[in-house]
Length: 77
Length: 238
Image 1 (cartoon, rainbow over the protein chains, first blue to last red):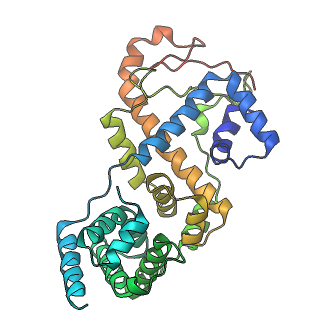
Image 2 (image 1 turned 180 degrees about the horizontal axis):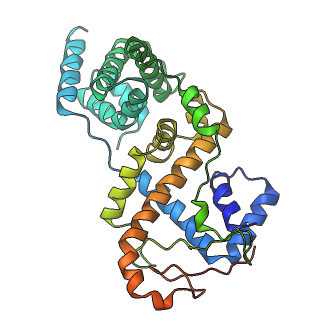
């Protein structure tokens, strides 16, 4: 496997979708290639950082409109 | 932290705090979904608002046979599509998905690999460098995080939505395929391209900010070491 191939297969690898033979080739390549280890690490870091993106704040006006609607709904039974 | 089932039971009991918690918890997920189908942000916000009104109207009949997430997703998608048509936007996710997956795009700029006539064709010519301030650190700097989050906004629409659902909102591949009515393969291709692009933008940020540093230390270039901050020639066996 070349480094270029690894960069194309990496999502399938991370998703656990690579056929076993390709999976083994990829891991073999990784064990020999420091640069691709860094690449894999960067991909994992990217995913981790995206997962820790702060929650998008709801605009105050929208939240306040929704609260009014909730209170009306509650009153109406 | 209350789990979703508890929040829904409390919402049925007219608990305001539970409603607020659900609205806030779901906003970052529902807004990008609505955003995809309608022409502007204000309309997308209205779609989210209307979806919650529909939830209030229907919550007493919601028996939890399907997940709440699936239910509210369907409501938002239906409302957003209707609004999209009314705004003459008429978009379908599959159209964008087909356009974005239909042509070949490399995950990494081909110039970063060695040419066919070299000793190691298709192996790195410019190796990726670690992004951390120190190898022990598991964290990116806040500046890098900003670059990374901004990179998401630059993605083509279908890629952005899939990445937002998967990596930012934590949805499973199956959930994303169901929500967007796409095949698992297309979902994976869109995710792959999105993640590769975001990684590439962060890498560019490092290359540009490290250029001055590299230029002043170019006596070390051309070695086969891949040091932090120094692009080296990599001699890797396949």
